[in-house]
Image (tube, rainbow, N blue to C red; front, side, top):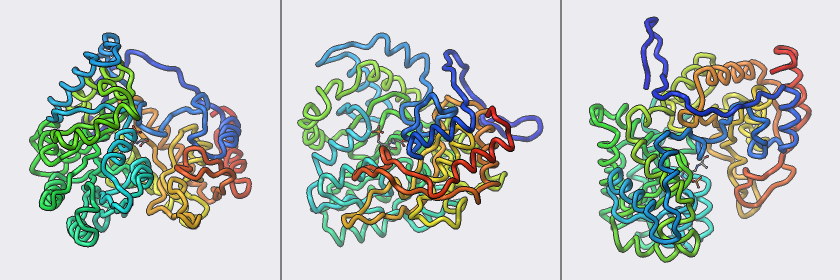
Length: 481
Ligand code: F0G
């Protein structure tokens, strides 16, 4: 929620109070340099003891509510028939309107089950944009992802409120080209993670659903950030300006055949699920659930997390909770814009994204600008972000790098975790780094795994720019921070 101060300044305000805290540590620039070296210049490989603000992801890192923690204490540990499952099923029915529920240990497990049940070799899956794990599962099943976003979706400096929209004409063309028999489903991701957490509009979803239905193709909805997409629809699409988050979600779900989500984001727990009202589709997925996840009443999740997700799903429909991350992100983006730092606009649903191609305009993608910038941000601040660029794309079959559409450094804002002074600190250090951007050099792989290389790949700086950056920091700020 935002409030307007007497000066006219608008700030996001926390609609919660802190009950339990965890100490953090702010290592010195010398310690940060040492830590990133040990991590192979890959922020995934840092230890959290070396991280001040963990903005790697909002996945599983949101602050939980007292009601969620309370529910966890009364979970029903049973292999089959757990009452915790029925509480989650009630929430799914109430909030999302689906009768059949398949729990899974997290979002990618849901993607695995969907790919296993529906994707055959030679199939194509049209989507507004891919997510890394989504693409991996479609690829592993022998299918191919087709990204059919609208023109302008990849412009990082934009005022388009719905860069996550799918292009209906491209969808029609894909159906004509490949034939319905090769399109197991059309997937809409709310909000499109890799292009900056950008939402799609209700009007767009309705249009896409109408085309898919006309051809008998199921619409799959990735709702990992559903409450954020619903919040943006309420804020940006005039038809919904007076609607509640629940009303927007109910309207969204009218267009969905299969819903799935990572429960680690909007739902502030650690789990995942698939839900549908289509018995036939449900029965196609169900047999795979015990093979890969666990019995159908826990699906690989701890029953404590099942309980937490049941509560989290209901709470994500509360206005001040649905907006809690997005309003902080909007503030973060606005402040960096004020400082002249190139960021993705409009602000999205999970993070503040820095545009590394504009931050480091002379660096070729072959030197991984987003990876280099993520490492540089860490050296400059102890803030851990995530590379979302070419490092996050695996090589093609010929072994060539696949240059990413965008080179972004994602500074995720887990919901209700960090405060305004944390955001101001991050803004200040990124601004400082922008002033010294000419110091930042590229990266090269030292160890490179074949699949999802961004997780475990190790890199080395080209030259000694890491040392130079740490030395510049010490010169400006002294030894301590
Ligand atoms: N779909 C979307 C849109 C996601 O953002 C994620 C995860 C997944 C699916 C997979 O879910 O992690 O529970 O298996 N995004 C995380 C991130 C990892 O950091 O953005 P998961």
